[in-house]
Length: 267
Image (tube, rainbow, N blue to C red; front, side, top):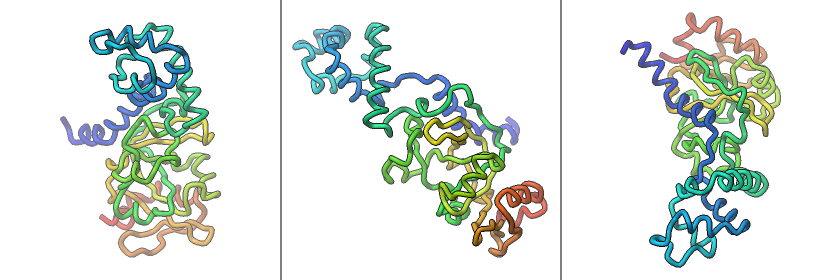
């Protein structure tokens, strides 16, 4: 395998896994088993589960949600197809109304617009911790691809060890709006990476999900919100290499990246 192929695989392997998961959009009883048990209790379908589990494993039958919770969630797939469909629709509706952070990622993102971006795509991530990210890389993120739909609801512990993060295509309308409103943070980091782009129904914008640990911090450029203007910062001297509005800063970096690479990356 050539070096360029190895690099392409590194930058796209985890993102390709995410894209496959979202395209398939499969109901995962392992993630939602507790809600499946609630459905069974509310729809009197304990007997259906008792039939597929069998008298050897459930000699006394299944009488309550507590009885069912201890069994393998994959028994869901042994239910008749009509009950699987009924359960899936009920669970998605129930979780959306009662526990939205538990709703699977593919339920928040548009099926028709999902695509894998090339690793040379310029992305921007907004954060109040942009300086730290530019120096240390993406240390925090969500490692469960099934729980990316509403990450603001997740605890700090669920983001502590790194995983998937969110960005925008750097020169997109969504990025420009976020830069203007500070919706996700006052500063930003700019970098090239593969990612999965999709329309987020809740946030009403195109977002890019990518596996943060794959982004080398040496390739992350720091953009500071400097009193209303934006500044492209040198990693070598901490000086401003360029000052202007957000859009002009992105254009400057893309145009001058090769010439100012040492300052932009610190390499």
